[in-house]
Amino acid sequence: MKGCGLRILVTGGAGFIGSHVCDRLLSLGHVVSIIDNLSTGKRENVPPAAHFYEIDLNSPLDEVFAQESPEAVVHHAAHINVTQSVVRPGYDATVNILGSLNLLERCREHHVQRVIYAGTGGALFGEPDYVPVDEGHPVNPISPYGVSKHTVEHYLFSYRENHGLDYTVLRYPNVYGPRQDPHGEAGVVAIFALQLLKGERPVIFGDGSKTRDYCYVGDIVNANVIALNSAHSDVYNLGRGIEVSDLEIFEAVRNAVGSVIEPTYAPVRPGEVEHIALDASKAEKELGWTWTVDLNEGVAEAVAFYRARIEKNRA
Ligand code: NAD
Image (cartoon, rainbow, N blue to C red; front, side, top):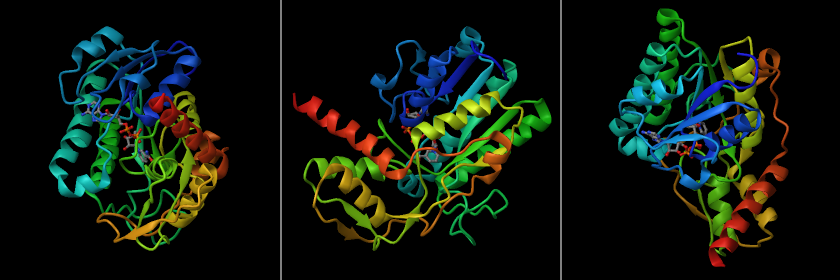
């Protein structure tokens, strides 16, 4: 899908990653509309130039599609709380599976050309056989969230086979950066930053040796833009391929904050894997995507955002 001025519908556009995607699409000259029920997203994240619909993914979406006639849909709306998905798998599935299905039905009826789907790489593979994990690794999600996010990949395949709906799945690692809320799959940078800035002691679940692959939100936005324009449409793992331990990410945030506070430790939470990092070689080869923002640089950006927010709230 080449060119600017495309009509693009972004679900979850009031959320952390979705709102950054909207900002970039608007800056590139696209016409952006947003569906978001503000369950975790914020009104203040919605760019003024976007057409905003405060509705649920599971509600009738015909009016939005009729009004906006989107050529592409970038699907970020989801229930993203891994721990909650273990407690309430039905709710998680209602949002992530049935909500996505409702969206895909409208895409089919309204002749959308391409869907970009924000998948998960971090919650998809279970405890991996090898790290970094490529797309050929067996899929064994431990949490219901991982199951629901992956299920949509199958529906996308089915819609392409049956209805010719083109799609690309971008499987994200732990994405972090400004606007992230301290909840969900990967909010640890936000959590540590806010706690340390307030002088509180962060909790590390486990002994600090669990590892994750952290990628700055700007790099993830780049992948969305490339995927929209690419001749390739497939499933891609994204990430830096580098394992960062909980203690290392704590240190990175603590350095950026300039704090000397020590963490406390608590038992590991259910549904979490020990080690994960994603091999993005396929995305690099086919899409020409690679990460650009170094961990300390990205963490400093995130901490600056939370510092400014705390100061604004104090004023
Ligand atoms: P987020 O919570 O900030 O964004 C999700 C958005 O979806 C929110 O604005 C929320 O209000 C909206 N939403 C939720 N349920 C909805 C519903 N039923 N109807 C309409 N809107 C609804 O989370 P995020 O971190 O920006 O995640 C965005 C996407 O990226 C999600 O699909 C998530 O699964 C995926 N993802 C994120 C990460 C990460 O590290 N943050 C990792 C892997 C995958």
